[in-house]
Image (cartoon, rainbow, N blue to C red; front, side):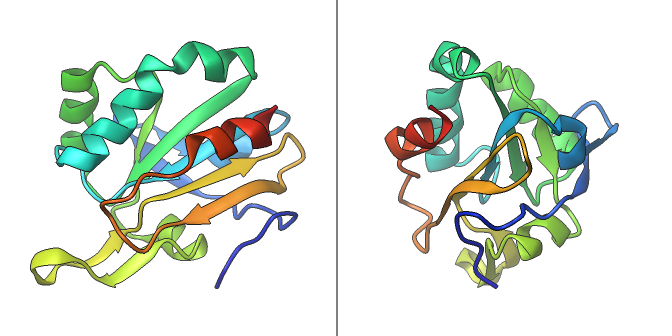
Length: 153
């Protein structure tokens, strides 16, 4: 399933690094950047999330919340968040429900690993519809964050 601009963003409830459930619907009335990334502690993912960390003031000024999601366990994501000092929630899609709902999942990733999130960026408007949707086939590519910010603005 391919999501497009104007579609209602699928709701999800995932476990955060604080081991509490976080739902997209918790952010109703706010703009949310929903990022899927393949795996914590890998080079491109670290670069991607640290670039958001370093630009957090821009996202704050656009009144946007960031939710970063991977299929890693909440424990792995907790260590990653701590090591990289990431100022936004990291959510575990261990059961792959959100990645699947957003069409952001590899049938097969590297090393024969199956069911890994594709690197993707979605912007959810305050009304719950999508303002931006980008799903990358190559895990080595980064989402176009200029387009993400334009969709927020």
